[in-house]
Amino acid sequence: MKAQIGNILYQALLRNGLTQKAVAIETKMSNSTINNYTNNGRIRPTEAVDVADVVDDSEFSMQLGHLFLGVIKNFTGDRFVRSLPSVNDFDEIEEAQEKRAYVENGIQAILASGTPLTQEERARLKSFSLEKLDSTVMDLTLLTMIAEKLNVTLMELFADRMPYYKEQHYMRKDEQVWHKDSH
Image (cartoon, rainbow, N blue to C red):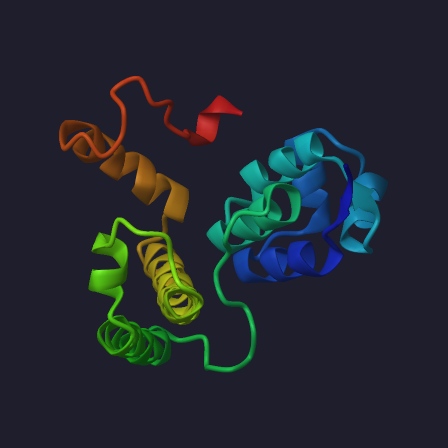
């Protein structure tokens, strides 16, 4: 599978003050190859990982993960100003909507029920899950921006937290951990 990453690569280069030439040198790819990717040439996942390692940008990495693996990514639209105070305000709104949907849809009872879902329960659970998704993606967006302010990537924050997750048995002890130098 190959994907076009031109716009997201261009935006990541701008955010990080990088040139195509610098990325080419660090990835040991030709200038024309990086230029091709920036102009929407198709890229393989392995080369995309190499580029992401050099660019070292959480938003870019999430967008690549979304393109190649279908994982959730952060919000990138122009609905809100990309500033921490603005995103934090939106995060509070989304969390309030999630909590309201949880109560209004009787989600606790639906999740506790051992019987098959009725059509009405399915609709209420779906309504709540969409609000939960909005809140989760906004959380991810806020975390990405906080990591950026800390001058680290979201992946680095997660790797830093992994020992705690293992200690709490949220993650298996043998779980592999992403590390910037492991690619």
